[in-house]
Amino acid sequence: MEKHARAIVLNPKDSVAVALTDLPAGTFVTVNVGGTMSEIRLEQAIEFGHKFAVRPIAKGETVLKYGEAIGRATSEIRPGEHVHVHNLEGIRGRGDRLVRGL
Amino acid sequence: MCTIWRESAEGEIGLSEDCNLYFWGYRRPDGRVGVRNHVLILPTITCAAQTAQRITELVAGTVSFIHQHGCAQVGADYEQTFRTYVGLGSNPNVYGVVVLGLGCETHQAHAVAQAIAKTGKPVEVVSIQDHGGTLSAIAHGAKIAAQMVQDASCLMRERVSVDELIVGTECGGSDACSGISANPAVGYVSDKIVDAGGTAILAETTELIGAEHLLAARAVDDRVRRRVYEVIEAMERRAFAMGVDIRTGNPSPGNIKGGLSTLEEKSLGAAAKAGSRPLSELVEYACRPSAKGLVWMDTPGHDIEQLTGMVAGGAQVVLFTSGRGTPTGSPIAPVVKVATNTRMFERMRDNMDFNAGTIIEGTETIEEVGERLFREMLAVCSGKLTKAEILKQHDFGIWRIGPTF
Image (tube, rainbow over all chains, first blue to last red; front, side, top):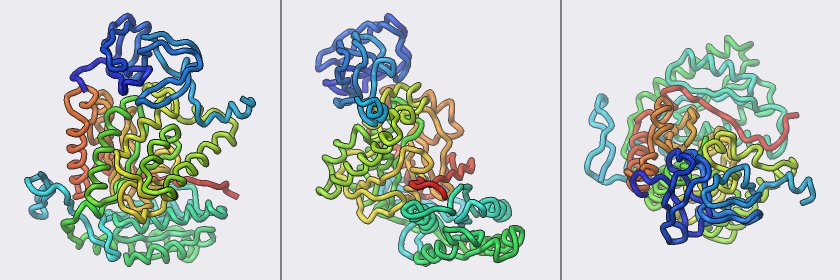
């Protein structure tokens, strides 16, 4: 890992980056997205360890981290937006969906 | 490159130039090697737990635990609890056992003692009802334990190869750094143990939901591959049966505050503890692995239930990563607490042993931290005490799979 990197994208396929320090809203962060260094402006403050989108994500789209599916977007997400429980749901272990007949 | 040496009774555990694949341990009658030399007061029934505690207060060198089990249990749930008691008593970290029963319980002390005695170690039974009450049982148990402790203290450690180690791996109070720093460092150690001929246990089936395909792809044969999908399906079905989103229970509020949004995300980070070597075997809770190499034990994500299962399965030492910080330990096995981030390591220094947060800062690589952690583990195996041991974190919990009747 780069010394004192502020954020990291773990895999070229990923839709999100992880903040490695608390990042205020409006910060410009440079991360490797699909092999290209890209500058992303953070729409919200992103806490240490939290995720922000590095590409546009459509509602219902599978979100990738570590090159694997971590869940599904529950609303449209713009690059630089916080990605967490308010706009990302899990796909596995959804006993609630079975009950609702989904 | 480094080894652990002990010059004399007063000498310190140090590192010197030599092969780095040895530690100093206690050889038991059944040939297994322990990294500690405990005398265990094992209450087979919750009703005897307080009596067991009183014995540990009287006799230095004894350990015990509080629990709620041992009666009104049936079928597979009964078997699992029985197996956990026997596994704990049989663990090579234990020199000898005083099995403490009440007398009327479902999990009879004599049956547990008989099973543990197969290891050839000293085992005695004390029954509260037979002795006419707790005070006599405490006195009798303490007398037996005191002699065992003195006998145990005559044993000397001998030089042992790491291929005799079963290392448990665990993550608890995880955050988003777990899958980036500490878990990959543990994975490095797991690979090193496996390459040296030892065994590494991966567990927490719940926290592999979403990552199971990665482990299945590394299974040594179809039978192991099938078992992977079976245990994952069984765990997921439990959430379905309760009609809830598993996210209401796992990830925890602390995990979520730390940046983990879904169970799949947590699992992908947790799976990093398994390194990269093939998956040799999948064993049930508290079962001892029959294969060497990387082994998956079916346990829930509950920290203490998982820890108890792995130690009952024969793990002599556990590498436990945490992002939020947890004090958890075992009565009989050293648990090395590995922090995922420097902020928490500094704040919870009293309960943490090792910092992997330098990976996040970019001042150390995963490999460098992995090497450092491997040497720390060897030092702990040879006698260096962990914070959880020093602070008497004698945590214990059994994964119950049936109701109490």
